[in-house]
Length: 134
Image (cartoon, rainbow, N blue to C red):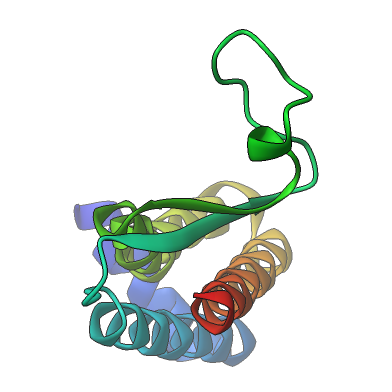
């Protein structure tokens, strides 16, 4: 923990680009967390929870119409993955970025944080599309 605080001080003092990227990742993750929590519950028991181009394996057959690609129905509790991903992106990925900064430098850490921002944005878009289909 001591190394993390020392590295955060270094990032704050001399690496403003990495600090800005980490703040953006935190803001995007908080927005994803709040949006996913407000849209978590549903009045119906079956909601759209995922999308796939390939059908799911059920009952020993891949090619049935019920298992074909497209939006998949499930219970609304399956959407708990979205707030969990927001926490992972906001907390864990920022801590990993600090460790990458310690080992590889600010360039690689900035690259990792921007990749994490893109993952959070894609997760947000996926949730919006699932809500639109449900």
